[in-house]
Image 1: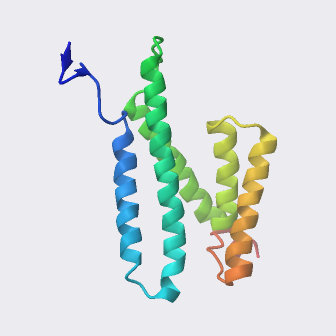
Image 2: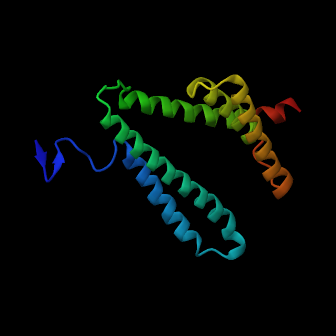
Image 3: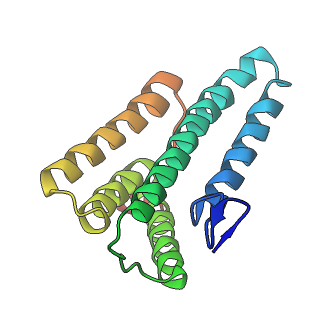
Length: 161
């Protein structure tokens, strides 16, 4: 059964892509608003927001291609329910917040990155540690060395000193 040339149950957007579009719209609006800032204070938000916008567009394209590939296959895949996916995502966000609070932004982000890559994305230990080490090094070099701005050191670091 079809309606207006589309099969019954066909969607315009892939399932779950509405959230990506909401974030994309928000980032695009923030990027547009950043052009009202002075030139000296606008370059960092514009760089970050442009990269974020490009990554969100890439995410939307990958969701669209994955949905297209899933509809072309005759094998039905079993996916976890929405509540389970949201719970897992919120748990990982909580782990990131806890790691950043305890160990500081740089070390906490690196530890979170290695844990997420190893246990959630199921990457090898060597790749997980290499990417996490690179992230920690880039954060330290960018903020501490290049900009001279110290990031939050964490709740444990002052207690250890």
